[in-house]
Length: 123
Length: 159
Image (cartoon, rainbow over all chains, first blue to last red; front, side):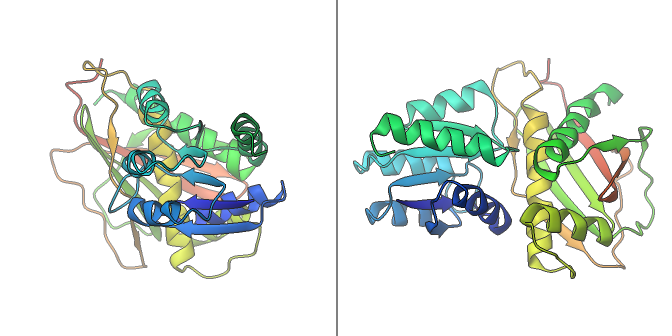
């Protein structure tokens, strides 16, 4: 299981990495903006993408749209401060498999990841 | 600017502290920020745009910033560096994000967030333009004191 952690905050990437290590996911890649996320996701090296929304160069939501338009079906969980229902609906319509609002506790993120991977048949 | 507009931001601070920092942040009295030199050391700012325009700022004394980053990462942090700037930027992002979701707008469109900016150093001065009113909320926590400041430039599209 390899996860791609996408967030422009290195501290938040570290927090996410620490959280998912608790469920045994220690093989991770990083991206700091939407463009890098697309590039990494298209490599086909990942089983899971954790994707921030507000980032420089390309928003996470736009990266998600590109990833799905390219036919990549890797499960994507948005991990973001964007908490409005309209944002969540936009993400789900754009192909997000799940949604986690910051701030979060590690157990909450882990639960969402487990649910997502189980539904995707890769958990 | 109505004082109650500060409440979603106070709630955002509380959610951040209880969820990710494992302690409460107790707020003091809401006041108006004064346009004078600010002795505190690390300030993270983020802009609001779209249905409401404004700025949100969190200002931390260095010891508070170091204690918070140590808690967030689970490793001691002793100097103010890029990691600390990154962390306080993410904190203001989270606080503003939680707060903006609690506002209802006339169009139904969410308020947008800018990317955060961090200012640090002992000699910087924060000036507040004469037409803007910045509400200031001091907080105390077991990680140290800090303050939240918010100003709105345009709230005509808020319900």
